[in-house]
Image: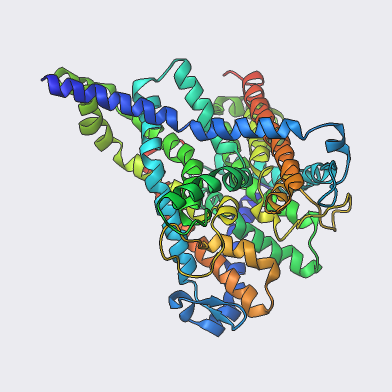
Length: 280
Length: 277
């Protein structure tokens, strides 16, 4: 019975992969390699090129990572080095916990009603077309959403840095910031990298919050302030309205692409974590 | 010398400021949900059905019921399989196959929720030719699985093998040992893992978009579409009507409260029923 449950888990994952693969066959037959190189996505004329969404996905995810890094790094140093205990640390721990458990649809809703008007004002004052929604707004929301994940893993590895090598650096007259830069960061580099990878995986696949604030345009975004679409958001938008089998299959192929990309990223991240043997 | 110390202080101040600033979005979100959510919550919010746009009042009783139905189906689907799977990899931890399953579970956890939605659409919605509560529940169940497997495994791994050996030495069969000794000893961890996984999927929307689909009416039939709180928040917040926005705020408040209560419950369970070895 135990063995059966284990096998069933394995079957489930391989089943997911093959279901996606089989579902994509009509689209692969219709578009072939053009699916990956085509810059236009138009269900009406039957042209399916994923490039606008791949660009949209990479742009939002990396921008979100870039925005969130200073913050998540600060949280992890705050909790892992400066204030390991105390009321402030307790508060920050709770705050990141709750931040991680807020549903993404609520992030999206809040972004739509609160963040979008602010971004619109900002765009007006810089004489950019004031959409309000777009790549930049989506990245901001994503950044807030991934802060808990990066900071949690980074904190765990920073706590693992042995006390004696820190003390050795202090005894040589290093200041705390020097110990952080020269001892703690190099020592925990791979763990921090794993944390970043896992957050990236999360950002790439995030659907609801992004769908609600990205503006849903199927064109290649001209700048970070233009509306766009990610792979996940275009699936969410078009799946129930798919008009024919090839359209549906093209969306499934996007899902397959997303599955493979996030799968690889999570695989690498987990291998690094396993090497460090911390609880992820 | 002086410059290095100033630099050090500056670094510390920047870290503290940035760490504190990152809690700002959370405070803003919670503040707005509480302020606008409580304003639209009253008794009829919990017992009435949604009203058409333009009419005030109306409630989300259908979505609350739907969320409950979905979670029950998800639990039925995932708890037994998850606990058994977790027990398997902790029992056979050195085998190659456990290693493989563990890797699978980790990759599983990273699958974007929208992809789970596609899968369940192909597996359940297409053969049945309709959106249904059943398919939505299974989608949520698939998302709960990796969390339950991992928490079960981590809990059981901490139980000393002497406990198992003592039970076996007394003549108990392997099944009895597992059911009467090992699983009860780890019940706090297993139970809190289940609670946490419920709190994770309670707010999921993406896998429900093309499985449970949403339904403005009360529905008890698991073969028909149901609404859920996150789906309702999504549909109402994307609408242009202010009355619907205030309903969405109210629903957000209910959902967040539910999730936070579950989180607190989880901490209590894992503390209270902890077995000390």
